[in-house]
Length: 131
Image (cartoon, rainbow, N blue to C red; front, side, top):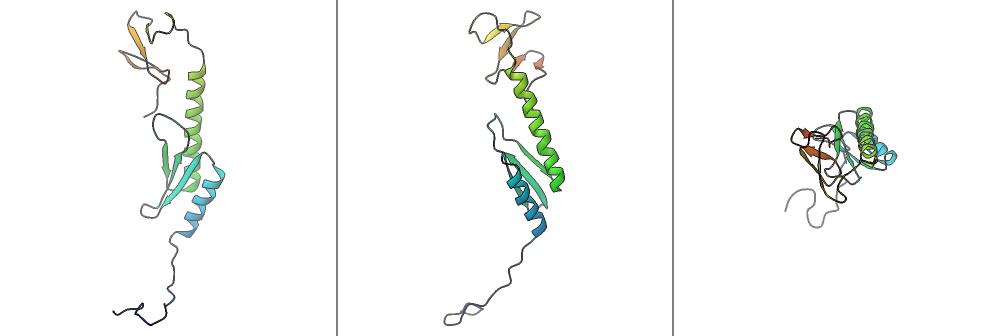
């Protein structure tokens, strides 16, 4: 066998190159300061990613090319989540006891989805989930 790791020869030290060191350090800093998020830096795309750690119907993933931009996207996602939680926690009158179907304002049957949002023939209510 040839090369630098032949039998009987000592291992040679190889220079380890750290690609995008400042960006990776920035991702680690953001990851430590935002505890409800997991932050990564993609070497291939040269982009920051953050994945929310909270429970929800769909995963929340935001991305940006800068650390500051990523933190802004994370703030926006948290504000959207807080707004939706506040809307869902407000009491809504439901007629007919524990029934999951009720009459809408126009008399059309309106079904409630498990998250508490209402869906009618016209589409989602204003407090619906984000895409």
